[in-house]
Length: 248
Image (cartoon, rainbow, N blue to C red; front, side):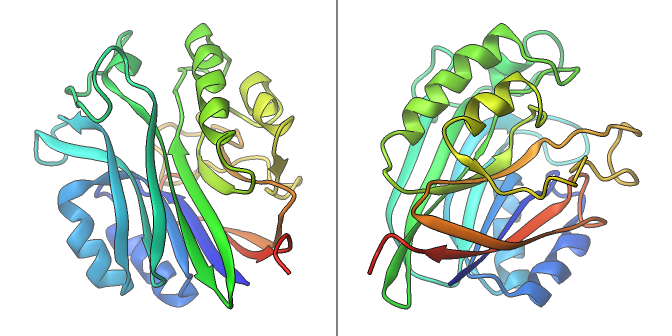
């Protein structure tokens, strides 16, 4: 059994909120989104885990953190990782990993590359491929043509792995087109009674009731004890236990 936590940490805003959670949970693997590269050493020290890989998506240029530093997704673990794959499935006309400065507004998505970061971890003689992504944003939670194109590229990236557990901030609500497109291919492990993953106190926009954070799996994994924790970022943390049932 492998223990796991997923969270969008909202850059550097909530270090003192989510680090204590990870200290208590002591998961084997942690997937984080909106990670600022320069804060990785502080996160590693706080949670007592090493970063497996950081995959940048854009160069952050807002005023609340230092300008010109890379932001992306990262996996941390107390286990040794192998077969680490950084798969940029949307590159916006650039080379994979070739970052441009983040811009708000109508061209926002053109400044963010999309990546599926995954790695294989071994525990108790069984292997676990764990992946994470931060998917394409829309302003109202409704599907866009860009999302429709990007989700096909995302599914193509996922199809390389016969068995995988993946998580992330999808920016696409459960019950709507993009989330359900993914859910047709992979099992949705988020409790059905959870109506939102947006923290009603910490998110900059109040009253958003959308389940946009994800934990999907293939049939070879059994995901159990899925639970959420609010008050740690502008999104909730999702914790779970994962069992490999395809290996004898």
